[in-house]
Length: 196
Image (cartoon, rainbow, N blue to C red; front, side, top):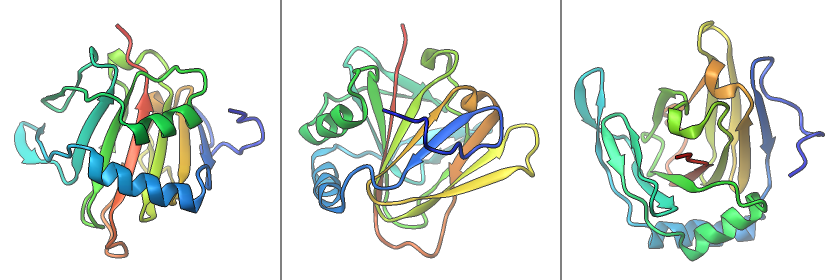
């Protein structure tokens, strides 16, 4: 994947590239429907500041079957690559470096993801995270971890790819805020490499 001619969305301390129409509208429509139907979606409780709350979205974990994923007090066991997941992975990952994918189903604009960094030790020193969006467009925000006034936003559209790499997960956190603008569902897939 050539990222040389794509501008960096971050001003410093990270590399983020955005490909607005990585998948065509027709491909994206088919993949959205397939994932909606073939993935065993779950809503699981997580621990935030010592309190157990239900995640405001549905999730699934797929990929290498020997790589469970733990965060916020839950451990997710992987399902195998489905046909739709394999199509997406083969397109964004011709070198076969990603071992797994975290799937999030946002049922409407009230489903969200709070500020966080993908910086678990199992992801390595400078994690590469490839984020594919299907369905409703949603605003995705970056905020500098120490200078909270420094925020960057991008609209993640149907069929788009956002690639985060370099020092991004050290210095920038990200989120999907709630919105009253969106009533349609959205599926987001974040491909990553688990080590060990």
